[in-house]
Amino acid sequence: QVQLVESGGGLVRPGGSLRLSCAASGDIVNIRAMDWYRQAPGKQRELVAGTISGASTNYADSVKGRFTISRDNRNKGVYLQMNGLKPEDTAVYYCHAQSGLRRDFWGQGTQVTVSS
Image (cartoon, rainbow, N blue to C red; front, side, top):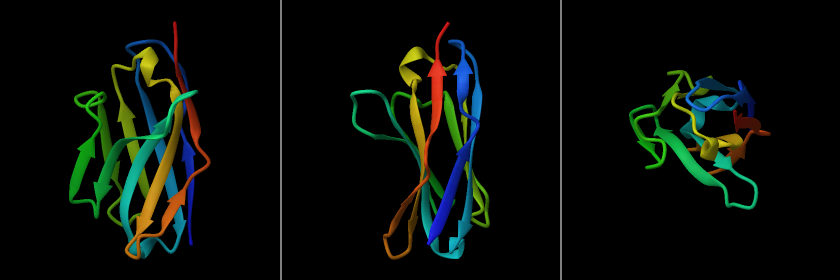
């Protein structure tokens, strides 16, 4: 089992920045992928940014150049630096981890609201 706890969400004005953190505990040695997803009201959950074994990263087109994902090299955490925030970035952001056996684990989510 892997436990994930997000923090760092909040209210920010358009153009502002936030840094999300996700602390991982439990069977973290076998984590293969760590990602950030988000879900806006009335929309499906979508992948925002991801890393696989800390070696490669991928981003949704909508956040490329604005968001940066980073990961602790001992799988103790994953982070999302969000710059140039837009109102359309408003959503609940979820931390996700996948083990080498392809088991999925989710955090409880943290709200990000971008509004003037």
